Image (cartoon, rainbow, N blue to C red):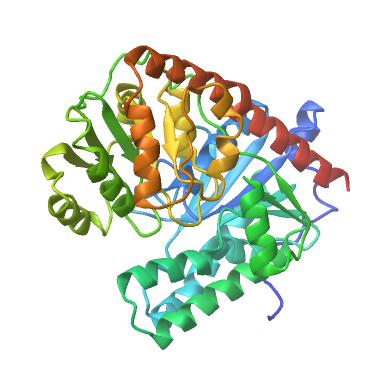
Amino acid sequence: MESRPAVRRDEGARPARGLLSVLDGTSAMHLLVAAHDLYPDSGSGGTGRYVYETARRLLDRGHRVSVVTRRRGDAPPRGTVDGIDVYRYDVDVAGERGDRVLRQLPGALRRVADAVTEANRRALVDHVSFQGPVTSLFVDRCVDDSVPRSATFHSPWPTEYRIRAREESDVSNPRRELNARARAAVERYVLGQADHVVTLSDYMREQYRRVYDAPAPASVVPGGVDVERFDPAVDDRYDVEGDPALLTVRRLSPRMGHDLLIDAFARVADDHPGAHLHVAGDGPLRRDLERRAADRGVADRTTFHGYVPDADLPGAYAAADLFVLPTTQLEGFGLATLEALAAGTPVVATPVGGTTEVLDGLDDAVPADPLAREATPPALADRLDSWLDLPDEKLRAAGGASRTHACRNFTWKSTVDSLERFYESRLRE
């Protein structure tokens, strides 16, 4: 690649450390985050939530955090989100038209360079955190080589794309394969620029090693959940039908396993006539899934709620009797699983990816195993059956144990404690 248009540190004019540490004498740092998306921008996903939750807690500890991210919806190009400095740029990488993306790149790179310059002017950047391949590529090209870099590897970008493309059509498409290879090249380059990689699970660390041959050392720092916000005692519970009420919360897209869940629910529905399945989330598979529920004879006992506003999620989790995570592929961690556990709602899940790590140890504290033996409709139905047969008092006790598990092992405080130590260790090297 050609040399990057780096923003150079002027050592003669300013100190080598961020201004915050000079002014107050602390070890405060300025973290620049290159993010795929950022909560609460429209369409933001789990990565955007992770960036937001960790960034605002680092701010609470006296650090400065600047985020460069793609602009979504009507979000302003420049602003703040709960004290986080946010710089947004326009680029569309979702489609198949590679020529259109290429035409956007020069303008996007200029806007990112301007953002990095402004962030550096406010306080010199001490560390760059890559949280998404495209934005990270741009930011890397605009930051001085001397600034330490780390990458949080949430999921292999080309693998996710191939899964989605196969669901859309099983016909071989050279353009799609070229698209996947381009994504792999971008992500490989970004990971190669990092001094160290962070993953949220051992599973995703192995994916990083398998897909990219581990160009940098990797550490596992699990994600967290806001245990004060997701609480069984939440005042405003969502209105859910069913006794018991089953809930799943995720985008209706390939690999999420909604088809598997509907098939499993159809297998147990007759034995549990009061049970009702609630599907929260929207996406390209909604019509197919609605037809599937009708074909399986459970349309009248399955409610598709569509997009549920973030403010309503704590009440939705708390109102459900059982949360189901039916992932079939590539579950990197599962923030929704933690949200359900913190809300005091027992979880039943397929044994895919990082889910097994999130639920590890919980089987000793609840009356039935939370994990299906495999990601198939019969196996998930068997596991649902074992939970739906439990009396109410055992379900309530399992809810209490679920919350205890989340509070002991997966708070955002513990996540940010680890991240703060990690960033500080990189600065000392």
